[in-house]
Amino acid sequence: MAPTAAEQHTRKAVGLAARDASGHLTPLAITRRSTGDDDVVIKILYCGICHSDLHSIKNEWKNAKYPMIPGHEIAGEVTEVGKNVTKFKTGDRVGVGCMVNSCQSCESCNKGFENHCPGIIPTYNTVDLDGTITYGGYSGMVVVHERFVVRFPDTIPLDKGAPLLCAGITVYSPMKYHGLNVPGMHLGVLGLGGLGHVAVKFGKAFGMKVTVISSSPGKKQEALERLGADAFVVSKDAEEMKAAMSTMDGIINTVSANIPMAPLLGLLKPNGKMIMVGLPEKPMEIPPFALVATNKTLAGSCIGGMRDTQEMLDLAAKHDVTADIEVIDVEYVNTAMERLAKADVRYRFVIDIGNTLDKAAAAAE
Ligand SMILES: NC(=O)c1ccc[n+]([C@@H]2O[C@H](COP(=O)([O-])OP(=O)(O)OC[C@H]3O[C@@H](n4cnc5c(N)ncnc54)[C@H](O)[C@@H]3O)[C@@H](O)[C@H]2O)c1
Ligand SMILES: [Zn+2]
Ligand SMILES: [Zn+2]
Figure 1: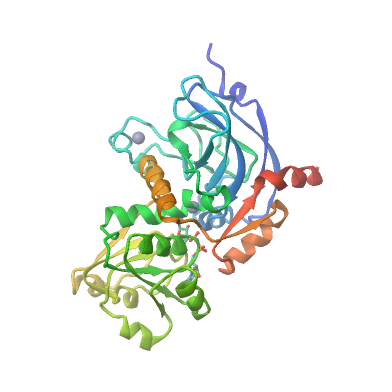
Figure 2: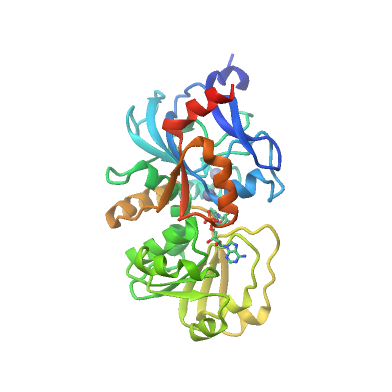
């Protein structure tokens, strides 16, 4: 008789869980499934903090299941593989992003777009195919079907590489599929946070002209000097916005809050495209003329498929694209969340799980 889900989940692990919409994270003992034939067991060393983790633990998308262990920018090392696994072996440096399973047989899955599968299993806050709750990467280990594991190229450090698993693929995918990766094109990056700063780096890697559009004038110098952007427009500055009107071929909109859209759509050339990747809590108001008058496109984009995620990592290695990070201890995670809510991070917090989780868990006992 096949083992029940509970019988399969015998591997002890510890994670940082939110228990309610306060989002406060504290250690929680959990179990993960024992190694299935297609599974890769990963010792998690680093996990990035995505703004989606913050939206989720605070139940801003109204779908939280507590206790919730967030984290979908997972980097670590393989410690064991199931007997059917061919892509990975013990000791490999690997990553896991926003999903850990899908139906693996629908049209989307067959085309490599597991991110569009109606049966997608996100890395946390959902129920896996075996009926158990998924827990994310703010945790010591995870067991994942090999299809949803990617390999880090040797030159990408795991700490600076972890954010590529969500922030990287989320901006890379729309650039690829909306043709916003052409040398000489003018790309606007709206919002200079975790996603935005990686978009700037990919834009430059593709040979584009990149303009950051931000509400924070204080980020101008580092956007130009450190991240290599060509120009910086302060979205609250009417003169600067006017000067930049109708100049951009595309905009990747990474802003996590509701902001007026019409002036931003005005930055696009005729036929220009704005791709939404930010997920504010409330519906957006779009004045029809802002789109219709000069044939603009407003589109959305959700992470990316597994093949594209590996392609993105390989390209990142080739062009030396990694995240600018602040590595934190587990004890600091709640403070980091408060700072992320205030956009006070340059540009991604990454939790040093490997060196600090066990100590924090022991202290909490
Ligand atoms: N589409 C996807 O697949 C996908 C994947 C990952 C994240 N996301 C979403 O993308 C958004 C950004 O994620 P992130 O991790 O880069 O977050 P982040 O907090 O690092 O960056 C968000 C940026 O938005 C800016 N911002 C916030 N409020 C603003 C306001 N009122 N006016 C102007 N700018 C403002 C911040 O200054 C910051 O630069 C979040 O909503 C997240 O949930 C979507
Ligand atoms: Zn994310
Ligand atoms: Zn599918």
